[in-house]
Image (cartoon, helix red, strand yellow):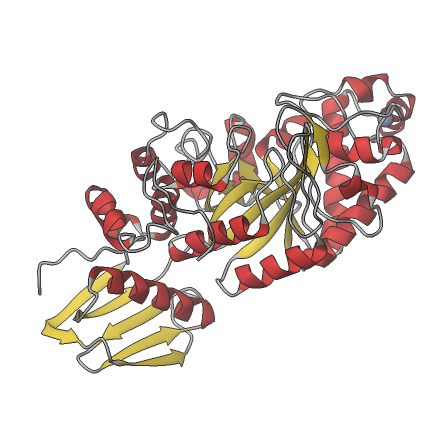
Length: 467
Ligand SMILES: [Zn+2]
């Protein structure tokens, strides 16, 4: 046994040093596609003097390659002979990028996905529609991207390249992803074992959609796409059937494009004054015997969820959506953001699945210095308000990057690193194999030659372009 710290993030579950030999840089690699007890993402990696053996299914083999890639950063020549047996603690290890508040180009998104995959994250939740913009091309309802992707404001425009929108000097901010770009990104992500989950805000967070099609809203008034931050009152009308049909058409187009098994529909609205004032929504509440607008939200979100499930999807909602009443555990995956401990514990107790994005350590967009990767390592992955049985319902962690104050990739990189790799480690490495004290040294070590793609600190020139 040799006393060497391997600069691997996330830290593998089990590493055995095989004697004092070294593996030649020219060693041949043998890949065996076999099932391992740890599941599809588990892998076995053995380095002996003249050969390297990798075993696992396709995702596991991909991770064996990532581990080897990190080892080669630490040992540019010969690598110590070792055997690694590794498998993730949680099946869902994700990060969310808000492409609404600020638009990130296709190469920027690729850079972020690639860097996340380097640390064995496997889910990319892509927030694409909210009050401040609609960022997906729609063939069926083209005003969604034509009108919904443009807002006025103090920022200069940033075009999305392919469509050639925007220009210096005006005060419009715009950008959307074409279907071609999205398909390319999906292929790029799939090659890296990253599932892409589209995120669309309903029934609140719908200002951009209502700006594009005022008939979707309760008032029918023409409104602009929201330009600033904050909470907006614009909702999709829950009373008129044509609004529901319209919404399902849009969701069908999106889920077909993404070939997604999951879609994040938000599920909450902070202000419900429009529903309260809308004769159609009031009539709906009367017909259903609903006491208030929170109950209407539950009914509405439940109905959208049921339609998505009938199409073979697994819809995801924020835990705020549980406020209006309980959902059956099979209806939704619930993502913990903040508050709602009682409702979540109850949901998990009935067998509902939870993704942990607790605001106290998973929101990675805080100003630098306020947030500490230590907090990610120290906390999580299971919320302390869940009992042992409920805790089993936590399927993973997701780091959130809301981009109100993040105009570009460089700023994003400064905030994500090393907090996102810390989150990857927390989600991957079993408690019994954890070593928080060595995390920063391992992180610095495995990214030493990759600073451009995996920037380490504020001021790092990295992440300028996808490598
Ligand atoms: Zn209405």
